[in-house]
Every structure is written in C-alpha cells, then in structure tokens.
Length: 206
Image 1 (cartoon, one colour):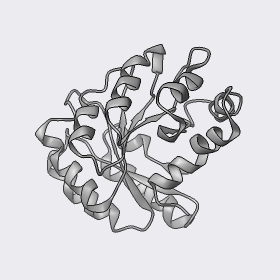
Image 2: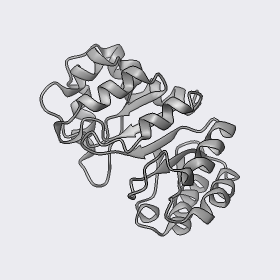
Image 3: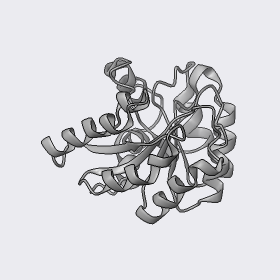
Image 4: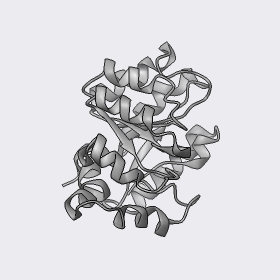
C-alpha cells in the first residue's frame, strides 16, 4: 500500500508526514509513503521533500487543490524534485476539474502524474481527454463514485495500463472500492493491472 496523511492534508504538514514516516519505519517493506506538500507553505516545500525522501519508504509526492493551479510557479520545486527522484505525483482532482494538472504533466513527460478521483461525480470526459493527450497521466480510481460501467469505459477509452486503483480508506468502504474493480466487466488481466501491476511499475516495486 502507498499511503498519505489526512493530517498533512488538513495543514499540519510536518506532523502528518511524520505519521507516515512512523508507519514506514514500523512496517518496512509493507508500506510506501507519499510526502504531502502545499503551496500554502511554499517556504517548506523543498525542505520537507528532502527531509522525507531521506527516510526509506517515501516514494511519491501528494499535492492538493488549494485554490492555486498546479501550473503556478509555486509548484516548480515539486516538479523539479519529482524529476530528480523519479517520484510519481498524486493530485486531488474533482468532478473533471484538473486545475492544470494535465498541463503540468504534459510539460514534464518523465514524471508519472496520477489524478485522484477520476470520474468522480460522473464527470469522466475531461479525464479521458486529458489521459489520451498526455501519455504520463494516469487515472486513479479512488472514490470515483461511478455510474454503471465507468471502469469498463475507462478501459475501453484509455486502456487498463493507465488506470491505478485506490481506496480513499478510511473514508470509504474498502470492500466497495475493491469490489467495483473485481466485478467490473473486464478481463482478469486488466483487473490485475489496475489493482496491482500498474502501481507496482510506477513505484518500482518488484
């Protein structure tokens, strides 16, 4: 599992990332972590990335919609650090509002960019269009309150290789989040890609 902190999401950046660090140290090899950084605290972005990536197990970066578009210069240290470390970047998106995350992905083709909550509230078209024109943009199924056949539609239009499973646990039932993929009308090989293989590839897990 690759995990991130709700506490950091709420603004207590350092303490939230420390919570993740404690899990990584207590369970080596079982969890990987996202470092959460925010444009609301621009002076801490680079130092927090360096501090956390020095801890074994931190592999990704988490950013959130805070009213600052992702192509704002405040985020430049994030993209540069991600390129230097080969770190996937996960961003909160919602109801088709990518907040320029797709534009940044286009400008940094060597970074895997992952859009959280793809298809949320049934607004899936912008995600499909963005993924089709941006080869390093992946659609994350976290939450994704899907209409019937959403996952099937994503597989058909974008491809299973570009979908990444996520749970949004503890906010949502893990059973539902797993079940919507397990019972999707797609091949078993595509389910394996979504539930395991794609994430393992992006995070270098063997």
